[in-house]
Length: 437
Ligand code: AMO
Image (tube, rainbow, N blue to C red; front, top):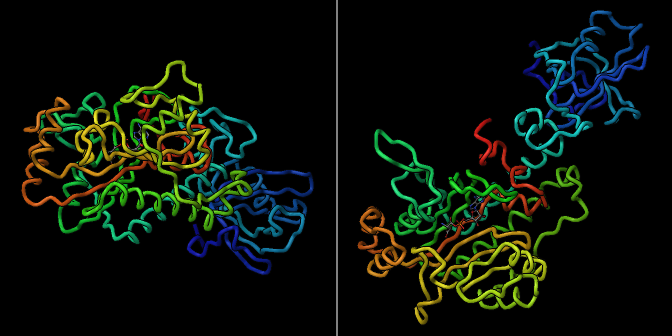
C-alpha cells in the first residue's frame, strides 16, 4: 500500500495537487469511451476519470472492474472539472484494490435501494457508509463532547463506576442476572448509588457517561435494553440546582449541534428547521400536569393523584407544551427510595422529570441524605437495607445534602434529530430480538 501514509482526504484534494486518495468504490459510471469511478471516504466523494483509449489497459481494467464497496487507493493528478460532483476529478496514474468486496451486497450503501431497519442493523458497517447514518453518529459524538464540556463548566468531575453489581436500584424486575465467580450478580441499571457515594466525597460534583442495563420486556421505539446514561450528581445541590445543571447540559447539546454540525444537519434534511431551545424550560408541578392532561380530554379515564403518567397522557401534555418542560413535586409513593421528600410535606417528593414533547428524557431529584430516613425509605419500598449496607453505611460518616439526575443519551439524540426509532441513535442496539452484532 505504497503512498497511503501521504493519503489525502477527498474533501482536501485541490486542483494542481498530485494526490493519493483511498476509500470505497461508491459507484462506477461507464459511458463508453470514458468512465468514472466515484470514490468515497469519510469526508466525501471524488470522481476518478478513466479515458479508455488513452490509458493503460491494466489500469482501466483494475479501476473499472472493482466491485462496488471495494476499498481502493488511487494516485494521480487532481484537476478542476465543473461537471464532476465536487468540482474536481483525478486522472489516475495508478489504482490499487486494497480489499475487494463481494458483488452481492446485503444492503446498498448508496441508499438507492431501501433496506428495513433489521437488515440495516445486521449489516451496520455497510449501513454506516450512508451519509445520513454517518451524520447521526457524528452528531452523537458532538452531543457527548458538548455534555462533557457543560459538566466541566459546572465544576463536575468525570467518573466511571462498576457495571457489575450486587444489587439493583431501579426496581427488582428489571435486572439482568449474571454469574460472578459462582455468585449471583447483576448488570447495573443505573450508577445511582455510586454517583451518590462519590458526590459525598470531596469530589462533590460528578458526572458519568456510561451504559445502563434494563431487562425491561418493552419492545418499543423508545426503549433499549442497554442504553447510555448521562448522569450528574452534586453535593450541596437541591433539586432546583440540579434542574439548572440539567437545563444547561441539554441546551449545550443543542447549541453545539447547531454551531458545529451544519453539514450533518443538512445531510439529515434538518438544516432549516433545527431550533435551539432558548427560554427557560417551564417547571410544572405533577398536580398541574395531571390537571392539564385531564383537561385535554384525550384519556378515557381522568388521572388522579398518585397515578403514573400514561404514555398517551405524556403525549397530550407534550402537544400542549410544545417544548421541553420539567414536571416537579411528584407524589413520594411513585418515586424511588433515594428521592427526598419535601420537608414540609412528606407526601410530596423533590423528584423531577424533564420531558420532551415526545417523551420523558430525564429523571432526577434531591436525595435522602439522612441515615434514619434513608433506612425507612428502603423498608417502605420492601427492600432489605442490609443488602445495601455498602451504600447506607457511608451515610453515617458525613453525607451532605445532594441532588442529581440522568438523561438517556439515545433519547436525547432521538428527540434532537426527530428520529422515529431509538435504535437509529445507537450503533449496535440491544433489544428483545437483538443480541448481535
Ligand atoms: P430513570 O430510570 O428514569 O432514572 O432513567 C433515566 C433516563 O434514562 C433513560 N432510560 C432509557 N432509555 C432507553 N431505554 C431504556 N430502557 C431506558 N431506561 C431509562 C430515559 C430516562 O429518563 N437513577 C435514576 C436517575 C436519577 O435520579 O439520577 C434513573 O435511572 O431517558
